[in-house]
Amino acid sequence: MMGQQGGEQDRLFYSFNLETHVPQDHLLRGIDRFVDLSELRDHLEPFYSHTGRPSIDPELMIRMLLVGYCFGIRAERRLCEEVHLNLAYRWFCRLGLEDTVPDHSTFSKNRHGRFRESDLFRHLFEAVVQRCMAEGLVGGEGFAIDASIIKADANRRRGVPAAQGVDWDDPKLASRAVHEYLQALDKEGEVGATPKNISLTDPAARWTAAPGCPAFFAYSANYLVDVNAGIIVDVEATSAHRTEELESTKTMIERVEQRFDLKPQRLIGDTAYGSAPMLAWLAQDKSIEPHVPVWDKATRGDGTLSRSEFAYDAVQDCYTCPAGKTLLTTGRPTADDTMLYRASVYDCQACALKPKCCPNSSARKIPRSIHEASRDIARSIANTKAYRQSRRDRKKVEVLFAHLKRVLKLDRLRLRGRSGARDEFLLAATAQNLRRMAKWLVPKPPLRDLVPT
Ligand code: SF4
Image (tube, rainbow, N blue to C red; front, side, top):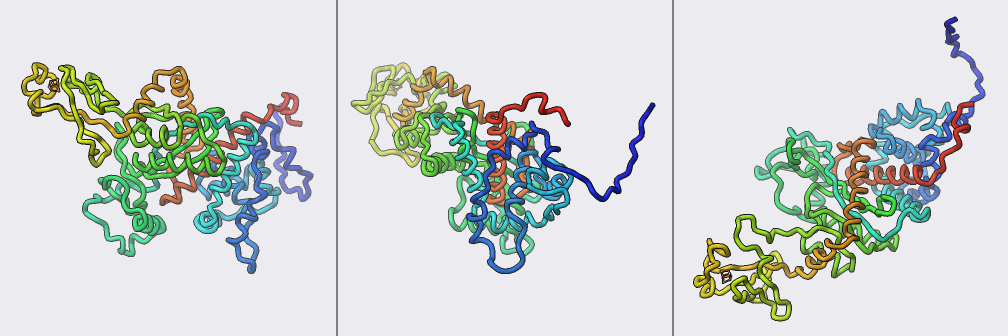
């Protein structure tokens, strides 16, 4: 016989324990073991007034934000609804069945106010990294670096050609993101070449053309990852520009060394990190092995002689060409830190190899970076077994970015400005590290414990 539910929901008294209704194997139970917000109140203390009405508990807001970033619910209004309705989320946020969930507008006020002023999200991220280290998940031997482009919350139709100039004094453009951009411009100036378009809603976002799709405004999420267990040890938000991404690598390596006393023996990266100055910084300044392909444009594709066919003599500091002639340098580097080694016009004009060597100039010249010794170190590492392992290890960063976009649904930012991007990336990286600890370190409960009682 088909049963029918009574539909009586008007009981006044229930005996209900939230604890027993959250499954033992729920991801939030695992994450909860590693969330320690005991220092949060001390950290935020100077940013709260000592008088007036008590605020919403900041721990509640942080727990709600962690739920949001762990489960890809970044819209604050929806997050409040989900926490209101979901028992596991209520349990994690330490809310009882009848406790009120904060209004979504409270988040906006706190995120742009005291949380940002106190650098709370970095504090939280670093506390989680420290916990990962204490749990033995961070080896510290090899780090991998990479950046992923994330769309900014800036409509491409609200972009104007940068060359035409923008009157930022126009009151219609006044916003937090514009104010922050102008402040950064005053302090640091424009980094790299002027972009083609500039966004009127989020000018710090970079106009970016990815292959095969229309250009858009974006930021870069830069991850520094320990390859032992794929723990993110640092994260930086930059505009989607290679110069800034390289600078952020240095910032992160220095910061991780300073904060956690961690310095890797090898850094793994793709060709974008293989410029001569970057390799020199790693190999010479930091004594870190660059497991990075060398950014090299020395091989010619037009059939003429490439630089590799000229022999370099480190003692004499000169090149010898295939015809046995010497190419010398003045010893003065160019603006881009390159030394030019020139053959004599007299030698080249009389040489039978000239059509294959320098058909369009009177004599051959060979450029050599002043950091060539570091490039040679990277080239020699590229032939080792350790380097092949590093290529495999690099996939751990790619997996984290795929997870960031597909599972945490962070393929487009919700907050504007550089600080908005920084807050979002820090929270996402914190969520990824917490999820990793929960999955790796929490033993699976026996099957009988999973059956509802
Ligand atoms: S063209 Fe000049 S540099 Fe080239 S092989 Fe001949 S002598 Fe050497």
